[in-house]
Image (cartoon, one colour):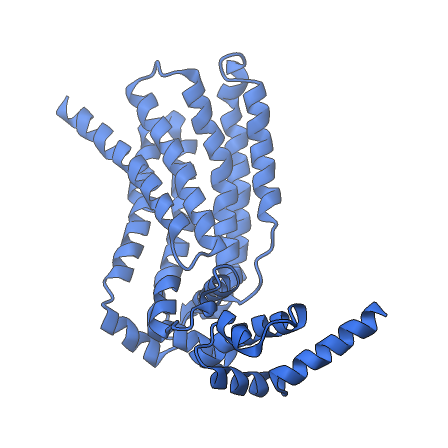
Length: 352
């Protein structure tokens, strides 16, 4: 009896912790599409694991709950493939496309058809649907494996050392294989094997990933980034976060904005932000922020000619008029007054 209770507890914890880990990857900063796919994958696997656990210990469970678990399986294969694909894209510094909508859209379409034909009314079809679902899952794993096979050699660092992110990538991929094998072999083993395989593979891999990241003290992290460059996908993610903070939240309008404040909002260390700006944009922190301020100033000078230059400088985040004039002339090539005059003349010509 005690062994049975422990088995239930262990299996249920795998599902619950998987859902909590999904929340972590959804909220992780800087936000990356690959992390969102991993979070969705953990959520889908967690739902499937919960269904397997409760069905094993309570075979009379509602049929709708069984349908939920089978529906979640339709998402595991595509999400594994999309996680691998977007991780590799960010590693190679390629822009993320929107094809995830087609892959997940098809899965949700099939799930929607299932809602129209519920398990309770079409039990025979649903009982045999697992074969098609597993084949669907397998196809995506093969596609993900092909992408990994064609991945750049830089995925494994010099000296054949696997980075933390690559370790997680491979663990998730092979963990998905283990889970599929466990569920496909259910007729020959036990239904609870699938739930247990999740706890021992995907769940453990993610926990190891988190522990490896947290084991780096701040001083260690700074030393690490001092000696080698950031992973390309991490640098691009930091840049995307910084751009969102500037264009979306307008942090550059704060005249007292500091590197420490920007790094904190981006969820990074100051060393990382400085390195990304220098390596990817060849700019200092001040130059990066001032470019956003000058872009706003040009817009104000053109759209609101009645404003005096001191107010323009203040609205754009400059705490000194002299700094505003010097920065504007350096970046634009002329003074704010001459830029305003040229903009007014251009507007008159256009309207005429």
